[in-house]
Image (cartoon, rainbow, N blue to C red; front, side, top):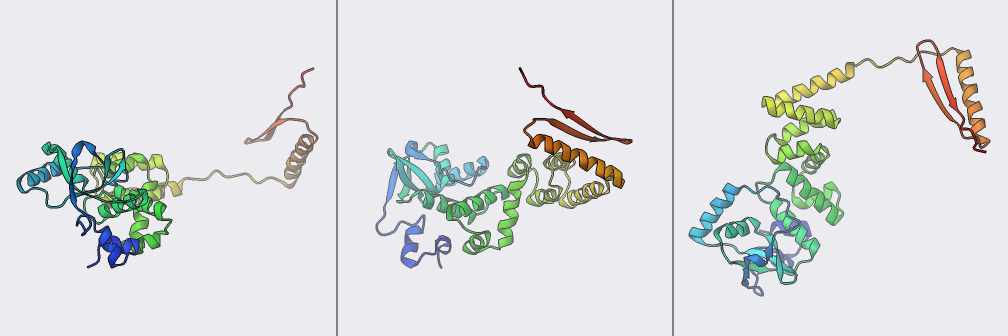
Length: 285
């Protein structure tokens, strides 16, 4: 069975061995690296770590030891950046370990970012916003279309598109998804409103009243319906003589401006008349 990364990078079997993150190849060894010399991955898509889950993992490691080493790269003055295994690293920190078993890979920034993103996307637990950010970063790193990215990840193009739409929602809505106050379907229901103020206002209602997705969708339909019913201001039809007069004044103002005279003009329409206000600044002597 091919490694999930090989489909993304288009690797052959020989190259695939080098990308198999947590199984050391014949040329690699598992090293003991000081915990204090290890730093998190800058491209880590996971922004929310469940502390209870980390504590459970720490207990498992304490009882059974580390089954798989973490994967790192050396990148700055003896420091090592995590490529894969940040949850295990955090668990080892919680246990107070001084060193961590690690495989050291020779990866550049793009490879490090891509592997970290894909490795997390292949696992469960990312929030929809974290997934969307990961898709966006991969599109940027590899200059791919949404369709090409979907093919490489083995998912539908609509999945990528729907996730990326979430990033157009206000920050308050995105944060609510991250904190699991609302679901992805709640958030997608807000998209048709378009206006960010209305979306944030409705978000507060959803949380306060604990609405399900169907109730949210019904509320959005009502809001859109009320917007469509708002009467649009009617513009009075001008007589032919009025149109000639207005056009003549506008042309005259244009001619004055074209002759190098600075003027400030404003048009206002009232119930009974049309008003031009013209200001010509005096030249200082």
